[in-house]
Length: 498
Ligand SMILES: Nc1ncnc2c1ncn2[C@@H]1O[C@H](COP(=O)(O)OP(=O)(O)OP(=O)(O)O)[C@@H](O)[C@H]1O
Ligand SMILES: [Mg+2]
Image (tube, rainbow, N blue to C red):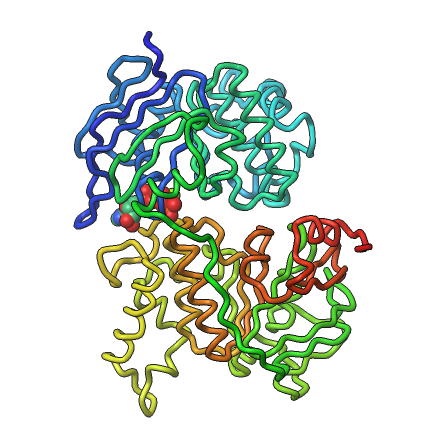
């Protein structure tokens, strides 16, 4: 059979003007966990969609266990032992776990669905991944992302897949959920299943993966044993140059003016939150996923109800009960969920970037086309959005590039107080640096930023102060001298600092 479970050789794929893949090779050994990495838009998801029969390659061949395979459609891929957990989960929200696993492979008896048999069958795989950690009869929309992901994995297993692809699986998981996922991957490996693992979190690869393939600009660059490389080497291969530092130096000016003052703010998921935001500062908010960080910002922004407490903007007491009002007061909010609230997926990059900035590019009520183009072009370039031009429709962009457009939109909006919720999720290392640079530039110009991040190095590398939340309450504030992962973790788990 040879040592390779999968070989993709000379794979080329073009979408009208864009060459997404150019003569790419991927060789995956049987039973290994193989990392597939590259910058946003490098072609990772496209390569995997060819493997799973969603797209057809223009050229190239696929060998499974050394034998040439033609994969005509997704069903065909499943029959050949290949399944994918997509960047965007693909479960039916209204159905429960059992039904989702069984979708498309219903057990019938004399023409009727045999529920008993279905349950037994599905539970076997659900137990394997979740050890009964949640109720298999709950509609999956009421489960956490991690639990939904487990169901997706159980579904893959139930197809008796030999090769499972995971496209940025840890993107929206909490640290403890990531641990659980890693355990599942290790178990899969032990049972001889081959895993292809896509992630922008390079640290993970060293914990989990055996080998790595790097793509850049749709081309195959290299494959190597993980044990033979380090993070800097990987970054160099990914971006084609050295990235000296992860974070740009801070160029802040000390400013004393308070732009936002929150006093005793209480809502459904948080209570008694008080803090001040100064002009030209980046205030980080740390804490575990679910601590209520997003909810606090949503409430200030007028997207959720406030039960009590007060908000002052530039010393004026305000009652912001709708996001439109927030916009009028100069707020901007780049949300973590780019699909839901962040983007008009069916519109172009240009229209999306310009959406929140129409005032800035209008003249006496008319949009100045030249001005608009110049401004959108600037952010399009600064953030290095991978697309042939700004007229590309957003739904065709890679996941990370969609995120960049969301950010570009708010950076361009001319807002004075900017909320960023997990701004670099799914974004590659090179582009992260560009985003940090832009943030630094904005605060120098007097914009104030609140950034929620679950990545502690990011909080410490970018923020001037860090607030930490635990179960809906503020547990502490760290000044730069006190920044450490240990301190953030302590506060995030509700402990006091000595
Ligand atoms: N259906 C499509 N139509 C047009 N262009 C597409 C389509 N799918 C992907 N592309 C383009 O192909 C390139 C590769 O995208 P792909 O999604 O494979 O990147 P990726 O490596 O997965 O990036 P990310 O890390 O951001 O998820 C991008 O330039 C993208 O815009
Ligand atoms: Mg992708």
